[in-house]
Image (cartoon, rainbow, N blue to C red):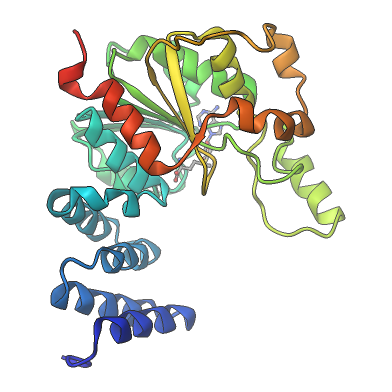
Length: 310
Ligand SMILES: C[S@@+](CC[C@H](N)C(=O)[O-])C[C@H]1O[C@@H](n2cnc3c(N)ncnc32)[C@H](O)[C@@H]1O
Protein backbone atom coordinates (compact mmCIF):
# COMPACT_ATOMS: atom_id res chain seq x y z
CA UNK A 1 0.00 0.00 0.00
CA UNK A 2 1.45 3.43 -0.86
CA UNK A 3 2.56 5.62 2.03
CA UNK A 4 2.32 2.72 4.47
CA UNK A 5 5.04 4.30 6.63
CA UNK A 6 3.52 7.76 6.58
CA UNK A 7 2.47 9.27 9.88
CA UNK A 8 -1.07 10.19 10.74
CA UNK A 9 -0.40 13.85 10.12
CA UNK A 10 1.29 13.16 6.77
CA UNK A 11 -1.58 11.00 5.58
CA UNK A 12 -4.18 13.58 6.60
CA UNK A 13 -2.20 16.30 4.84
CA UNK A 14 -1.94 14.17 1.70
CA UNK A 15 -5.72 13.80 1.79
CA UNK A 16 -6.29 17.53 2.23
CA UNK A 17 -3.83 18.34 -0.58
CA UNK A 18 -5.49 15.87 -2.94
CA UNK A 19 -8.84 17.44 -2.09
CA UNK A 20 -7.47 20.90 -2.88
CA UNK A 21 -6.50 19.59 -6.32
CA UNK A 22 -9.99 18.15 -6.67
CA UNK A 23 -8.59 14.59 -6.70
CA UNK A 24 -11.41 13.09 -4.74
CA UNK A 25 -10.62 9.37 -5.16
CA UNK A 26 -7.04 10.00 -4.10
CA UNK A 27 -8.11 12.07 -1.10
CA UNK A 28 -10.51 9.33 -0.07
CA UNK A 29 -7.74 6.75 -0.33
CA UNK A 30 -5.53 8.74 2.06
CA UNK A 31 -8.28 9.21 4.61
CA UNK A 32 -9.16 5.52 4.39
CA UNK A 33 -5.53 4.67 5.08
CA UNK A 34 -5.72 6.75 8.23
CA UNK A 35 -8.86 4.90 9.32
CA UNK A 36 -7.11 1.56 8.80
CA UNK A 37 -3.96 2.60 10.67
CA UNK A 38 -5.50 4.85 13.32
CA UNK A 39 -9.10 3.71 13.76
CA UNK A 40 -9.68 6.09 16.67
CA UNK A 41 -8.86 9.22 14.64
CA UNK A 42 -12.39 10.54 14.10
CA UNK A 43 -11.46 13.44 11.72
CA UNK A 44 -10.45 10.81 9.16
CA UNK A 45 -13.99 9.33 9.20
CA UNK A 46 -15.43 12.82 8.84
CA UNK A 47 -13.16 13.61 5.87
CA UNK A 48 -13.65 10.22 4.19
CA UNK A 49 -17.38 10.68 4.55
CA UNK A 50 -17.20 14.12 2.92
CA UNK A 51 -15.30 12.68 -0.06
CA UNK A 52 -17.82 9.86 -0.43
CA UNK A 53 -20.66 12.39 -0.34
CA UNK A 54 -18.98 14.45 -3.06
CA UNK A 55 -18.53 11.29 -5.11
CA UNK A 56 -22.24 10.52 -4.69
CA UNK A 57 -21.46 7.26 -2.81
CA UNK A 58 -24.03 7.91 -0.08
CA UNK A 59 -24.35 4.32 1.21
CA UNK A 60 -20.63 4.14 1.96
CA UNK A 61 -20.71 7.62 3.51
CA UNK A 62 -23.47 6.44 5.83
CA UNK A 63 -21.42 3.39 6.80
CA UNK A 64 -18.58 5.56 8.11
CA UNK A 65 -21.08 7.53 10.08
CA UNK A 66 -22.61 4.36 11.52
CA UNK A 67 -19.15 3.15 12.56
CA UNK A 68 -18.46 6.33 14.53
CA UNK A 69 -21.93 6.31 16.07
CA UNK A 70 -21.47 2.71 17.22
CA UNK A 71 -17.84 2.75 18.29
CA UNK A 72 -17.19 6.31 19.46
CA UNK A 73 -20.52 7.77 20.63
CA UNK A 74 -18.72 10.49 22.61
CA UNK A 75 -17.35 11.86 19.29
CA UNK A 76 -20.64 12.23 17.47
CA UNK A 77 -20.63 16.03 17.48
CA UNK A 78 -17.82 15.78 14.88
CA UNK A 79 -20.39 14.30 12.49
CA UNK A 80 -22.89 17.08 13.00
CA UNK A 81 -21.44 19.59 10.56
CA UNK A 82 -23.73 18.64 7.70
CA UNK A 83 -27.44 18.00 7.41
CA UNK A 84 -27.49 14.18 7.19
CA UNK A 85 -24.88 14.00 9.98
CA UNK A 86 -27.02 16.12 12.26
CA UNK A 87 -30.18 14.18 11.59
CA UNK A 88 -28.50 10.80 12.03
CA UNK A 89 -27.01 11.88 15.35
CA UNK A 90 -30.11 13.64 16.71
CA UNK A 91 -32.40 10.81 15.66
CA UNK A 92 -30.47 8.43 17.88
CA UNK A 93 -31.63 10.39 20.92
CA UNK A 94 -35.27 9.39 20.53
CA UNK A 95 -34.35 6.14 18.75
CA UNK A 96 -36.18 7.22 15.60
CA UNK A 97 -37.64 4.50 13.46
CA UNK A 98 -39.60 6.73 11.07
CA UNK A 99 -38.60 9.87 9.16
CA UNK A 100 -40.45 12.47 7.09
CA UNK A 101 -38.57 14.94 4.86
CA UNK A 102 -40.50 17.83 3.29
CA UNK A 103 -38.45 19.26 0.38
CA UNK A 104 -35.98 16.65 -0.82
CA UNK A 105 -34.52 17.94 -4.10
CA UNK A 106 -31.60 15.68 -5.16
CA UNK A 107 -31.92 13.45 -2.10
CA UNK A 108 -28.49 14.45 -0.76
CA UNK A 109 -29.83 14.40 2.79
CA UNK A 110 -32.64 11.88 2.38
CA UNK A 111 -30.42 9.20 0.86
CA UNK A 112 -27.98 9.34 3.76
CA UNK A 113 -30.51 9.08 6.55
CA UNK A 114 -30.13 5.87 8.51
CA UNK A 115 -33.69 5.49 9.78
CA UNK A 116 -35.74 2.39 9.02
CA UNK A 117 -38.88 3.94 7.49
CA UNK A 118 -38.54 7.08 5.36
CA UNK A 119 -41.05 9.27 3.54
CA UNK A 120 -39.99 11.93 1.01
CA UNK A 121 -42.24 14.77 -0.23
CA UNK A 122 -41.28 17.14 -3.06
CA UNK A 123 -43.24 18.49 -6.05
CA UNK A 124 -40.22 17.72 -8.28
CA UNK A 125 -37.59 15.23 -7.21
CA UNK A 126 -34.23 15.94 -8.84
CA UNK A 127 -33.20 12.27 -9.01
CA UNK A 128 -34.61 8.97 -10.14
CA UNK A 129 -36.48 7.88 -7.06
CA UNK A 130 -38.57 5.15 -8.68
CA UNK A 131 -35.94 2.44 -8.30
CA UNK A 132 -35.57 3.27 -4.61
CA UNK A 133 -39.24 2.90 -3.72
CA UNK A 134 -40.04 0.14 -1.26
CA UNK A 135 -42.33 -0.68 1.63
CA UNK A 136 -39.94 1.24 3.90
CA UNK A 137 -39.00 4.13 1.59
CA UNK A 138 -41.83 6.11 0.06
CA UNK A 139 -41.78 9.06 -2.32
CA UNK A 140 -44.63 11.51 -2.88
CA UNK A 141 -44.05 13.82 -5.84
CA UNK A 142 -46.48 16.50 -4.65
CA UNK A 143 -46.37 19.72 -2.61
CA UNK A 144 -46.49 19.48 1.17
CA UNK A 145 -50.03 20.96 1.15
CA UNK A 146 -51.16 18.19 -1.21
CA UNK A 147 -49.46 15.62 1.01
CA UNK A 148 -51.29 16.93 4.09
CA UNK A 149 -54.55 17.19 2.17
CA UNK A 150 -54.33 13.52 1.19
CA UNK A 151 -54.24 12.69 4.91
CA UNK A 152 -52.14 10.00 6.47
CA UNK A 153 -52.39 7.95 9.61
CA UNK A 154 -48.61 7.74 9.78
CA UNK A 155 -46.77 9.10 12.78
CA UNK A 156 -43.11 10.12 12.54
CA UNK A 157 -40.29 10.11 15.08
CA UNK A 158 -38.21 12.64 13.14
CA UNK A 159 -39.49 15.37 10.81
CA UNK A 160 -37.20 17.49 8.64
CA UNK A 161 -38.78 20.63 7.15
CA UNK A 162 -36.90 21.97 4.13
CA UNK A 163 -39.58 22.71 1.51
CA UNK A 164 -40.67 26.13 0.24
CA UNK A 165 -38.69 28.80 2.14
CA UNK A 166 -41.48 31.17 3.07
CA UNK A 167 -42.82 31.81 6.55
CA UNK A 168 -46.41 30.83 5.80
CA UNK A 169 -45.49 27.55 4.10
CA UNK A 170 -42.89 26.44 6.64
CA UNK A 171 -45.12 27.44 9.56
CA UNK A 172 -47.99 25.50 7.98
CA UNK A 173 -45.68 22.51 7.41
CA UNK A 174 -44.83 22.64 11.12
CA UNK A 175 -48.45 22.99 12.23
CA UNK A 176 -49.67 20.26 9.86
CA UNK A 177 -47.05 17.79 11.03
CA UNK A 178 -48.13 18.21 14.67
CA UNK A 179 -50.88 15.73 13.81
CA UNK A 180 -48.25 13.25 12.60
CA UNK A 181 -46.14 13.50 15.73
CA UNK A 182 -45.95 12.07 19.24
CA UNK A 183 -44.44 13.25 22.52
CA UNK A 184 -40.89 12.40 21.53
CA UNK A 185 -40.93 13.53 17.90
CA UNK A 186 -38.00 15.78 16.93
CA UNK A 187 -38.32 18.44 14.22
CA UNK A 188 -35.44 19.99 12.39
CA UNK A 189 -36.29 23.17 10.46
CA UNK A 190 -33.74 24.18 7.84
CA UNK A 191 -32.79 27.71 6.73
CA UNK A 192 -33.80 29.54 9.90
CA UNK A 193 -30.80 31.92 9.82
CA UNK A 194 -30.62 34.02 6.62
CA UNK A 195 -26.98 34.57 5.69
CA UNK A 196 -27.50 38.12 4.39
CA UNK A 197 -30.23 40.62 3.56
CA UNK A 198 -30.77 39.05 0.12
CA UNK A 199 -31.04 35.50 1.46
CA UNK A 200 -33.72 36.71 3.88
CA UNK A 201 -36.03 37.99 1.12
CA UNK A 202 -39.30 36.12 0.55
CA UNK A 203 -38.72 35.85 -3.19
CA UNK A 204 -35.86 33.68 -4.47
CA UNK A 205 -35.82 35.51 -7.82
CA UNK A 206 -35.59 38.92 -6.15
CA UNK A 207 -32.90 37.63 -3.78
CA UNK A 208 -30.73 36.49 -6.72
CA UNK A 209 -31.39 39.57 -8.85
CA UNK A 210 -30.64 42.12 -6.12
CA UNK A 211 -27.58 40.25 -4.86
CA UNK A 212 -26.11 40.20 -8.37
CA UNK A 213 -26.96 43.88 -8.85
CA UNK A 214 -25.04 44.64 -5.64
CA UNK A 215 -22.02 42.71 -6.96
CA UNK A 216 -22.61 39.69 -4.73
CA UNK A 217 -22.15 36.04 -5.70
CA UNK A 218 -23.72 32.72 -4.77
CA UNK A 219 -27.29 31.52 -4.59
CA UNK A 220 -27.96 31.26 -0.85
CA UNK A 221 -31.68 31.73 -0.17
CA UNK A 222 -33.28 31.07 3.20
CA UNK A 223 -36.35 33.25 2.70
CA UNK A 224 -38.20 34.35 5.81
CA UNK A 225 -38.28 30.91 7.43
CA UNK A 226 -36.85 32.49 10.60
CA UNK A 227 -40.33 33.81 11.35
CA UNK A 228 -41.47 30.21 11.87
CA UNK A 229 -39.19 30.05 14.91
CA UNK A 230 -40.61 33.34 16.17
CA UNK A 231 -44.16 32.06 15.70
CA UNK A 232 -43.28 28.91 17.66
CA UNK A 233 -41.78 31.17 20.33
CA UNK A 234 -45.02 33.15 20.68
CA UNK A 235 -47.73 30.58 20.02
CA UNK A 236 -46.42 27.17 21.09
CA UNK A 237 -45.58 27.28 24.82
CA UNK A 238 -45.44 23.50 24.95
CA UNK A 239 -42.59 23.32 22.48
CA UNK A 240 -38.98 24.17 23.07
CA UNK A 241 -36.32 24.87 20.44
CA UNK A 242 -32.65 25.58 19.87
CA UNK A 243 -30.77 26.84 16.82
CA UNK A 244 -27.35 25.59 15.77
CA UNK A 245 -24.90 28.45 16.18
CA UNK A 246 -22.87 27.33 13.17
CA UNK A 247 -23.41 26.22 9.58
CA UNK A 248 -26.74 26.13 7.85
CA UNK A 249 -29.05 27.87 10.28
CA UNK A 250 -31.12 24.99 11.51
CA UNK A 251 -33.50 24.93 14.44
CA UNK A 252 -34.40 21.81 16.43
CA UNK A 253 -37.88 21.72 17.95
CA UNK A 254 -39.18 19.26 20.52
CA UNK A 255 -42.05 18.92 22.95
CA UNK A 256 -41.16 20.46 26.30
CA UNK A 257 -43.10 23.13 28.13
CA UNK A 258 -41.17 26.40 28.33
CA UNK A 259 -41.53 27.41 31.97
CA UNK A 260 -40.48 30.98 31.14
CA UNK A 261 -42.96 31.26 28.25
CA UNK A 262 -43.96 34.83 27.45
CA UNK A 263 -45.06 36.03 24.00
CA UNK A 264 -42.76 38.68 22.57
CA UNK A 265 -44.67 40.03 19.53
CA UNK A 266 -48.03 38.51 20.50
CA UNK A 267 -49.29 39.10 16.98
CA UNK A 268 -48.92 36.91 13.90
CA UNK A 269 -49.10 39.84 11.48
CA UNK A 270 -46.31 41.63 13.41
CA UNK A 271 -44.16 38.52 12.92
CA UNK A 272 -45.15 38.38 9.23
CA UNK A 273 -43.99 41.99 8.77
CA UNK A 274 -40.54 41.58 10.36
CA UNK A 275 -37.57 42.58 8.18
CA UNK A 276 -34.05 41.20 7.92
CA UNK A 277 -32.81 44.02 10.20
CA UNK A 278 -35.48 43.05 12.75
CA UNK A 279 -34.09 39.54 12.55
CA UNK A 280 -30.53 40.74 13.24
CA UNK A 281 -31.85 42.78 16.13
CA UNK A 282 -33.68 39.86 17.77
CA UNK A 283 -31.57 36.87 16.70
CA UNK A 284 -29.51 36.58 19.92
CA UNK A 285 -32.53 36.93 22.18
CA UNK A 286 -35.00 34.81 20.27
CA UNK A 287 -33.27 32.05 18.29
CA UNK A 288 -31.82 30.18 21.31
CA UNK A 289 -28.45 29.76 19.61
CA UNK A 290 -26.45 26.82 20.93
CA UNK A 291 -23.54 24.54 20.06
CA UNK A 292 -24.19 21.01 18.74
CA UNK A 293 -23.01 19.64 22.09
CA UNK A 294 -25.39 21.87 24.04
CA UNK A 295 -28.30 20.96 21.78
CA UNK A 296 -27.62 17.27 22.20
CA UNK A 297 -27.44 17.62 25.97
CA UNK A 298 -30.73 19.52 26.12
CA UNK A 299 -32.51 17.06 23.87
CA UNK A 300 -31.15 14.13 25.83
CA UNK A 301 -32.31 15.64 29.12
CA UNK A 302 -35.72 16.28 27.74
CA UNK A 303 -36.37 13.37 25.41
CA UNK A 304 -34.33 10.37 26.30
CA UNK A 305 -36.74 7.53 26.17
CA UNK A 306 -36.60 6.55 29.83
CA UNK A 307 -37.22 10.17 30.94
CA UNK A 308 -40.50 10.52 29.12
CA UNK A 309 -43.85 9.54 30.51
CA UNK A 310 -46.07 7.91 27.95
C1 LIG B 1 -33.43 23.21 -0.41
S1 LIG B 1 -34.23 22.03 -1.34
C2 LIG B 1 -34.26 20.62 -0.29
C3 LIG B 1 -32.91 20.03 0.01
C4 LIG B 1 -32.94 18.72 0.76
N1 LIG B 1 -33.79 18.74 1.92
C5 LIG B 1 -31.54 18.31 1.20
O1 LIG B 1 -31.20 18.52 2.37
O2 LIG B 1 -30.80 17.78 0.37
C6 LIG B 1 -35.88 22.58 -1.29
C7 LIG B 1 -36.86 21.68 -2.00
O3 LIG B 1 -38.17 22.06 -1.62
C8 LIG B 1 -39.02 21.74 -2.69
N2 LIG B 1 -40.28 22.45 -2.55
C9 LIG B 1 -40.60 23.67 -3.07
N3 LIG B 1 -41.88 23.95 -2.77
C10 LIG B 1 -42.35 22.90 -2.03
C11 LIG B 1 -43.62 22.60 -1.45
N4 LIG B 1 -44.65 23.45 -1.55
N5 LIG B 1 -43.76 21.43 -0.78
C12 LIG B 1 -42.70 20.57 -0.68
N6 LIG B 1 -41.50 20.81 -1.23
C13 LIG B 1 -41.33 21.96 -1.90
C14 LIG B 1 -38.24 22.11 -3.92
O4 LIG B 1 -38.70 21.40 -5.05
C15 LIG B 1 -36.81 21.75 -3.52
O5 LIG B 1 -36.47 20.48 -4.05
